[in-house]
Image (tube, rainbow, N blue to C red; front, side, top):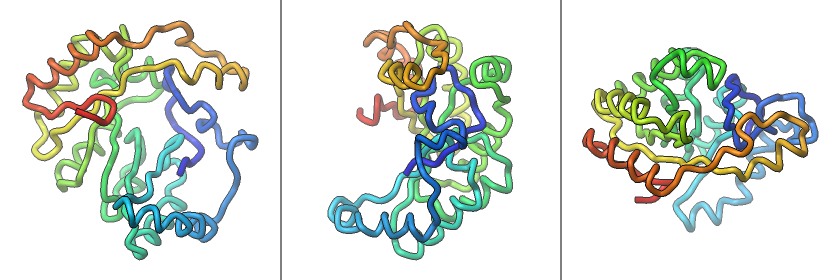
Length: 227
């Protein structure tokens, strides 16, 4: 399920249609109960695959009341919940999810606050705070790190990410997400400037280097969701 609205403005966003809530041509207004009716239609598939619901966006925590309400209903119905989040959310909104989410898919982009502001438009203070909260409470979390040449994929930034994750007590897995260009058509159709147009995806060597650096911190490193 993709929820509209996002507080970040990442230059590499692959879902630009999910950033602004007012883009009515992408998505529709729906009640929690209507959404649960749609979810229940897929119950046979979820039961067969031991799957569940993944909430993404945009940023799901941009709609905290709706998010928490539907997650409570999922929990009461025994449906597994994964929350795909950038982590930039006020403490009260984020903490309200802590007893409702089975798996956090948690984005980390930069540890340097200046770089985070430059490429996403916001500070990383809340991102770091909320990640530490997940670690403190030992919530099941998979860190997701986008590998973008010359931006996030520098050796210095990768080492910064490794330093931070290795300082945590319980979160020890990171999934590398190589940058791709499949969203370029979306930017053209929507008339939005694509500031990374023409940027090449990382090479296999780029990804291997990132994996080797992070693995050197004793972390389990996946690539695109696989080993």
